[in-house]
Length: 177
Image (cartoon, rainbow, N blue to C red; front, side, top):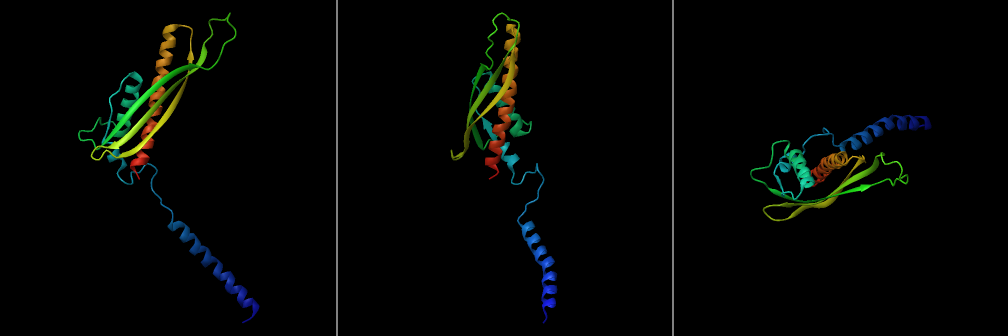
């Protein structure tokens, strides 16, 4: 066997080796639709009852969570999981206006809504997922008092919806395992 015969057999084996490596790499991949429900996560989410709210912002988070986990169907009749929810809110200014002569200027601020949550299985009391999440909404505080109250309320509502989406994502990830 000459040297040129060996080189020819090596060149022919490269595509075969590349094909084997490609098939090995593809065998480890899982291709599925982005919004698929692989293990019945939506069914598990629809079986969550959420604790009663103590104030308006907590009620906003609770309502958004009920809509998100149940797909708009409301609370479950026979829940399998219980979500204890504790929500706090805080409004704070961001900018300090040193120009006291200009009183007709709006100042910037933010609304911080934080939730501590604990998801437990009702039958066993086992904790599935617990944690805390925070959502921030930026607002402008106008000079008029009613407009300022309305800006705070709108900021709380926006932060509550964002917080509910974050909590739903955490819970869905925990239930899909």
